Image 1 (tube, helix red, strand yellow):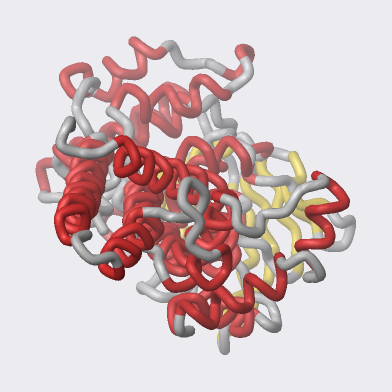
Image 2 (cartoon, one colour):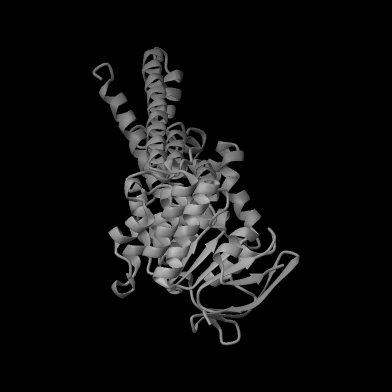
Length: 233
Length: 207
């Protein structure tokens, strides 16, 4: 990849780091929310459902602004982070990861929820009668059967966060080396005279990353559904 | 008595009540579709909680609403063969068979794995995935999986449904052998009179 300049390589590396960390951190949260939405009934469930979906329907700029309010120096979460860790996510790559995670969350919850709803509850019942407690049943039956959905959700979320623009630039600005991910770098280069070549290269990388993610997800889903399940999203 | 059941559960608009006791041997729950037979098996297995009542199997209390007893399914030592078998689709036949076997305490493993596999005639299926099995094969594996979990009693939901007549004969013979050779109380659900007449020693009409 010697046709990329060191700065461009750093941008790609930063984008990958932000997205991988974002998805890794938000996946358990997405799974928990999907579980609650798929398996439980409680008053206020509709409200939770709406809240989870909010980043999907809000203008990303508004999501970024809300994050700014929450995580800013005087925001409730921002204050907590600065007392516990003595640090701030503002203008940092961690902030970019938070924006990416929040934007990916609704897509991931939807995919996981769908796969959980497709798990045959009778199979869980069988596992119980065969002597498995609730946890063993979860790890030996429910989770493996929902796995194609969890994988699909991760890849979908990854692709979404690689492309994340509006919430990120609003929330943590466009700082080279910290928050300037691929889309922000493309945008920046478009503003610079003579930046077209860089735009082309970065855009091609974006396409390659997205297609690569899709190919990997297809491969993983096929493999895990050949081992059983057959739940392909 | 093997099964002593007296229970009540509300399912949507309908109130389902069942009261019966059955001596040891093979007992059939007989009645039309939709009468709640599967719900009764679910309650005995612990998958559905009755609103009120008592369930005893071979003298052991599995559920008693008055005394606040409700054993979880994994503590009931119940072999439950669901309708259509319901094998774990992501595990090979061998892993399906060993699922309950691996969880059963050593003193409850009355059947040797190889003996059970031979008894059921499924040696050639062990490495197959469930989706590749025929209806009769899947049914035999499901019965084997339940037997290998070391149950004290067996529940079978329509064990002969949607099988052609040769396969039905095969499974019926198998159930008779379980009844005679393992002397385990068996409760099975059916809506087919000929099957009930051939197999059951006690018939309980539902609905």
